Length: 500
Ligand SMILES: Cc1cc2nc3c(=O)[nH]c(=O)nc-3n(C[C@H](O)[C@H](O)[C@H](O)COP(=O)(O)OP(=O)(O)OC[C@H]3O[C@@H](n4cnc5c(N)ncnc54)[C@H](O)[C@@H]3O)c2cc1C
Image (cartoon, rainbow, N blue to C red; front, side, top):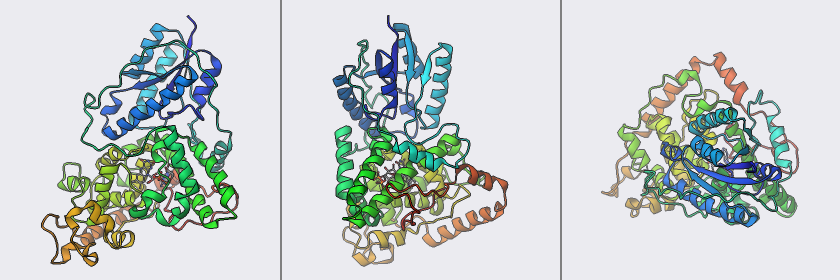
């Protein structure tokens, strides 16, 4: 039997810009494989909504692979058991998959797969998928190398694929995996065509007011790119998006400078995408441990505290917080500023431990990407030790981002009859409706307690060597090469928050 080259699809569900696929296809007969790992789907950070999107993304991938001549083989089980069963049936020449930086569970699984490969003398080729560098020695020069990766040609899919015909397992039903099937699925359509349409409509029309409309949940839904889920599942690569963005900017820079500025802001965020994933690659315990040692003894409430349920179900008594949470729980998406506000409110006002709140959010986000997620959650919880402490005032955010309360009334129908002037603090007025809850904490008092505690800790470690080592390891270096077209010094984006 001719040995086969296994292409293991992970978070790169596309035949385009797929180095693992192209390397394997050049080497001989292939088996395109997806391993559906029930143990992964038993982790606390994944959900039914994501599983449903995965299922549809795999169907789309299968159509594309079948056209090339080698349908996707889906196998259900532990990765080692699946790979070993394949090895028993067919000699394996090599294994190909992109380097993956995902959660603690996949990190541990990949270590076991590496041992298995070594034991059976199978070479595991792991090309890079994005700008994230494994075993990075220093952040110096990282931004430049990211830019080089983004400028390299997008890899075309192979013309044909050939290999043995192997049977697939059926994807298990979500109920068998004990996923919570009461969670609404997303309206976002999986697959390459939908992803490409989303990218095109953003670059040519929707993104024109991106800079000004990304902050309010009333407008962000339309004016943000909405590409995050496609990037998280790998329907599109960051490089494909970066190159399309550069091209679009070239077309519009002279005819529509405002649109060009929005495109610049968007391009910076593509850079952030990898910048944050790089942190988790460099330090996997960002998922589980307060980044700065000064915060490791911080005693915040766990998920058993009643504040947790009130927050997670959108019943805190703060209309804008509750509207954002209910919107997220229903749709699977929320804009950046409101994600930050939900975490800030949970970690500061409600004094909840981010390890509990981050899992709830991870399950809601269709675009859950651990490297971005945990780094952002720690930033917004004040535990990195190197960022400005930013405590969002939920009443001010409500007044700024939803002045007339349209978004609030849509998602918190109990407040439908409350007047515009009362909508941000309805508890102060006589038209407070029976069906809604009173605030579970006093905003000012809760904020003061949190600010005092965190600032006191921050002072105590000001000259601590650990602060410097976190800065050296993780902080972004100013780079002139973030803009897509003109590599000159970037003006600060008014909506840009700290990078660490
Ligand atoms: C607490 C918290 C948790 C988050 N968790 C995730 C997550 O799990 N997955 C995720 O993709 N994003 C996460 N983000 C970042 C950001 O909110 C989302 O990327 C964005 O809202 C996705 O919508 P979009 O694709 O329309 O974004 P756009 O504004 O159109 O941005 C385009 C792309 O740039 C990247 N990007 C945008 N903002 C950021 C940022 N601040 N940091 C890093 N990359 C960014 C994303 O890949 C995004 O898809 C989180 C932010 C916060 C505050």
